[in-house]
Length: 507
Ligand code: ADP
Ligand code: MG
Image 1 (cartoon, rainbow, N blue to C red):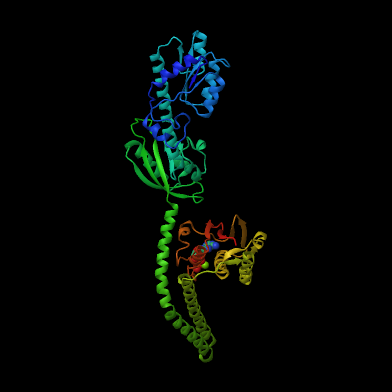
Image 2 (tube, helix red, strand yellow):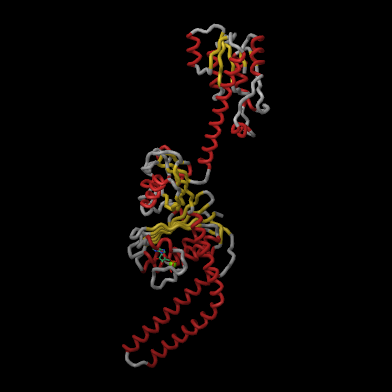
């Protein structure tokens, strides 16, 4: 962009500059493709385009509309001083360079030019080669700066956008850099994270020593390592929003002591859960085939056995002499009948789990359903001294989409589990609320709670801690919720009660 009101001189400048080949680096040419950037738009590779204007005003409007790489500006213009224009041009096109030319150089003019960030100040007696080489250098500088910006932009985009965690730590394990994915999982923004100890602040205690050791080893040896460690927003609450992360640790190359260790983490939590679920599903379907085949074979003898026990019981009442002997035989018969009934229950629940059946999809008044579940067990709860409660929001909860009977089964199972865990004087409470398109239901008790070691096994078929339990309740619950596009989460503390949260699509 040539800015000079002396038309003949301006044309002269233009001619000189046009003889140049624009230096462009490969990276910039690549980057320019499909990426509109003022001056290069439509310009043939390596050719120079020159705009000539006589006034500051016109120069500025070109700068704003098309941009420029290098401007050659006469210090004395009709509408404004070239020194003033200089700073306005640099503001309009950051990254461009401005060369000032003047007929009478004073020290003051030179200082003002340099202050304003001019690339060079040329006296009007300059030789063509002088101008050419100055413009050439300015163009090279602009191209270099563009290349650097582009590479930086690309690297930053890579780190920011990639769906992996990126953290850089120094040898002591203090954070130097984090990306947004880390910020999201660790619940911290990058500025707050800087300087803090990664392992101490965000890796769960159990994994911390191993993680530290691996970072230290990579810092010293320089060869990369892989390690799995759990990342949490707050290690004092290791189960809240914990993510299983596979870390790739590598060290910055070619640095003697100031080198950083890069930890690139992939969140494998969901993958692990899926693998587990796939394994469960496989186990369930194998069992299903077996169970369906055996069901009748087992149920019939069981029914026969119960019948025989009833007959035996009556016979005992009729024929056994002595009330003590009779009472003890009566007890034994009762125990056998009880056990057979438990087996029957096991069979029914097992079949429920194994049998593939489609579910209805209709609006189900969940508030009412929860009420009927509580009512069904009201007498039992009362007898055991347990208070039950359905919150106002539960009563008013909007309908969910699903199968009424299946959903009843879900909440009966959860409610009975809660009753089982609660001692006399305790409370079981059901709450429900709706949030954007979903209905969230909580079944809470203040009972025994669940041991930490048991938490991962709750949904395993046959996992039970109860003498008379089948361990199938939660498996059934999860299966039904999966069919409904719902989910379940269990939070519990030993001695601190249990809260089961179910999430279902609203009708
Ligand atoms: P079951 O009730 O037959 O034992 P479930 O699958 O319903 O089988 O539950 C599995 C186990 O989960 C229970 O044995 C119990 O240890 C634990 N559990 C489930 N719900 C609760 C709860 N609300 N409080 C304490 N423990 C629970
Ligand atoms: Mg149960």
